[in-house]
Image: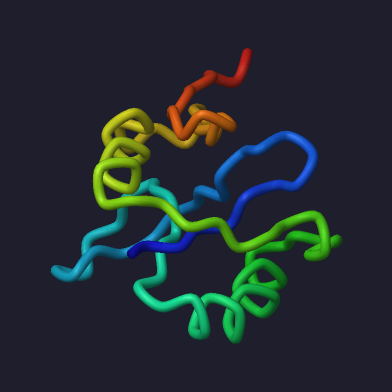
Length: 97
């Protein structure tokens, strides 16, 4: 089961520039395969990306479909954001700029 970082207030899933298995850059949601690994790495991961208050983010479990849908909906576009709804749905929003 994949794990991601979810903002406690907005339900946004943390997305940023990442590298795939072929070392190619893409904009996507950071996923971990293991909850313990996510918990161990999350604070450092966020701090390295300039997030000041890492306490605003929590570990959220996703199913495989949700995880894939997040990156599909982002479309490799850093101006888009994805949100995990309470019912498990994935919503997107584009930045105004």
